[in-house]
Length: 64
Image (cartoon, rainbow, N blue to C red; front, side, top):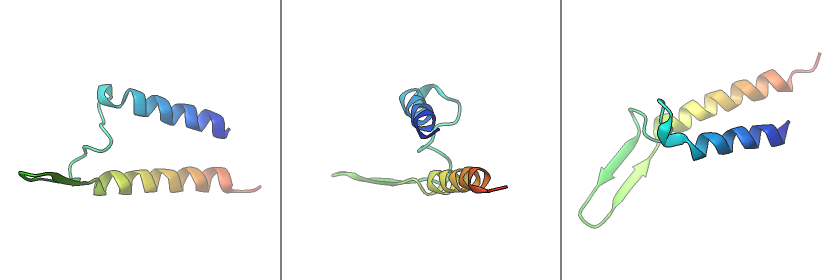
């Protein structure tokens, strides 16, 4: 099961630019560009992935 999840994550990372929902470039992510460099913090992406992973762990972690 873990191997399948890693393969799916790898496919999303590989084809991330072609997907309609670009993780890491969502509205609300902080990006500050300057002359000598930049700062990027994906706030909304982190929240979305955290909620999604929490839901998955909750669904698969329940014992009957």
